[in-house]
Length: 459
Image (cartoon, rainbow, N blue to C red; front, side):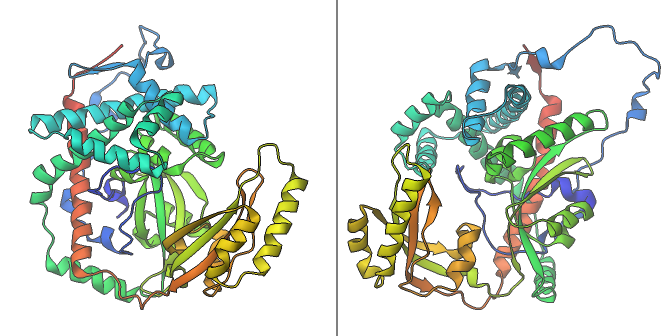
């Protein structure tokens, strides 16, 4: 299992989506163990095969940091503007602030990502696969919707941040074209037997009640020659995420696993499924924490623990709620003392709450906004609210929460559907994910070969 981990990314044949990582949420905990060892990527030849002299002289000093971040890939130009606009998306995901020293490192990584993206689009077109304008418009509108903006307003917003709609559309095109190509040239040749699926089902039942974890991963490949540099890059990424950067955004831009398209989401796994170092790290951190960079064969991994649960066991956090949110925004410049007065009045009004029917009246008295939120899983709420709401009944409200910057708010439960007994994933769901595993393993090899055959000129 350890030897194949760097190829163990799941393919998600889904549209690009900014924000939270997409996941099928099937709870499959033994998929990786069903992979066919014959489909593993072949190891690279060692440095010894190059027969390099031990005593050599470098005839030209070359500093990679002074190279302009532009390139020509098989005749197609990647401009400085392309790099800057994609880089601006990363800065945006980090709250608009990234140290200048970090920007240079990010710029070079963005260039590498754009080169791969260009190769994927070129290969798709060579196989008569293109992404239509209608498809791009639909996906872009979906991304804009995640920011609660119309496509036009979102395009204007991106311009103010130094990026553009063209940059996001290019990323959407790359992901969509590549996935379509894999569906045509790789997926039809991947087979999964009934015995393999039954074996996974048996293992799931055998491990019922054991803990499994929903993990995000940023995988950075390395060689013995550049491992120190890659390790430093990984530490810089962790530092940026801990300072408020989006893990999903960094995974999309920098992870070299196929799960980059879904923010690095590996889905639900058990520690035993992972290489020893990764499994140990996952078991030692808490939900919301990051571990790494962790050395594994072929590179380094950064892990983010998104959630945890028990295999095939009902979890009260899977209850689905119908909520009303009451929120009061603080005026700019509001002091902590002034905010406390508002919170006190907010709390007093909540004491008079008589179920969801009285929420509108309380909202008027407070001058608050009231928003309906249906189909909200407790598991998807911030960790401090989860246990609180597990024990709440319909008609009850949470204590006020928030900050001076975000305002004060409360959630009122108007409906609750508790989870049914956990029956686990179906036969077809397991078969689909094993197929995805194998498609992605071959996709990694496919992209590697495209890089080897490409003619790339750096400016």
